[in-house]
Image 1 (cartoon, rainbow, N blue to C red):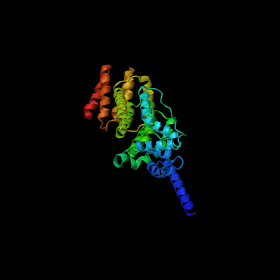
Image 2: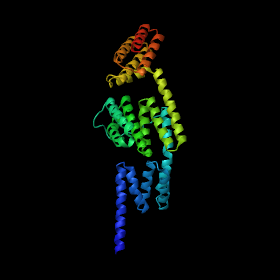
Image 3: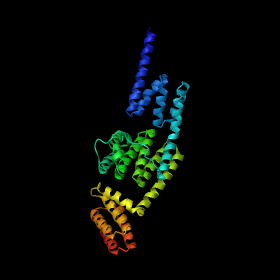
Image 4: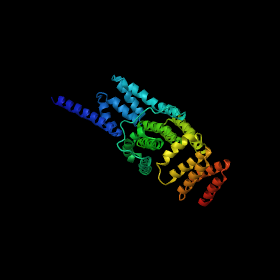
Length: 344
């Protein structure tokens, strides 16, 4: 009778560990989940080995995860074999997605569930992101990953009613979610965040952000002993970086750019972003031969940047001045050159 009771109590305790593991997994506490599922897997309770393997893959513990996959398959859980194959293909699928992003193929293959409860402006989203990024840099990803996920849950629905500035702002949150997941020891959960960041950055045509995301993904691959995948990510990131540089120096489609820039201008307060957008509007109007509007936006840019100390803004004004000279707009070029001399 005592043996039966002992066995019953053991079974009950093991089942309790299984349920604790499931609760921890749902809450995103994957290391706790692994501890609980490991007990269930050791006692061969249900699909405990499969659940443990899934958590271990997310934690980047591939060697142990594959051992539990083999054990689960031996116990008749064939889905464990599919789980192992799925994990090995995750990086490949991410890089294929990144390659499609780079050639401009349609990529919006996901839509956030629900609609935004509160509409947030891109600057408001970015301000919260910047604060969380500062926490990550000072205290590490573990300290702020949960807060980043809460921020992401609040702003992700904005995608469905968004525009390029909103897509950029939310993409930056996705990028930070992926980065803090990696720094928290959760590389398996980082990739979907990075993939969503790439999708949104492409929607916003933000090549610089695409380059940033790919560089972070490459660093993660390198850390987890996948140098070939890291090399591919870095290569794609380099292409995006070159595109970003080219975007700043060339104006491919002013009629399309002007409405987008005008909308973006309305989202900015005083500061560098507003100044750069005004310069971009001046450059695009100049490219269309509208000297009056180009001069007006240039004057607004000079006024907006009067107290701004930014090499980046000065470079953009220099490009505008060079383009004004080439277009024969000597008065505008002289005004811009005078501003640069005054600010140096």
